[in-house]
Length: 123
Image (cartoon, rainbow, N blue to C red; front, top):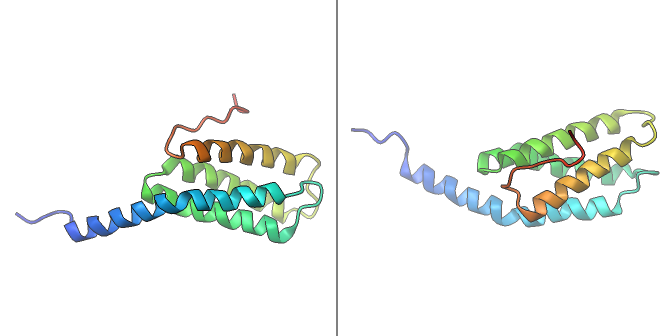
């Protein structure tokens, strides 16, 4: 009977999973560092783009490596950031609201990125 899943493929995938998980604290750390430098009153386009890029990377890879919720939440933040970045004039408080959501995400991700995510600001 033929093997349905190639053991060599599974070994490679497992190695990639381990690498993703090992790099995750550094990735979250880069996002956290950029967030701490972010000024909602005068957003720096380069810093905003870097934060968007990190969120995009997490959103695109996390589910593949067993961090589905981490990726879903990153995608939501990424999409919200993209909208704000595209606006010529961001309504007052929108960046602050986005940063508050990012802060909750970072707190959760730094603690246990495989845990169930609950955004305390939502009902």
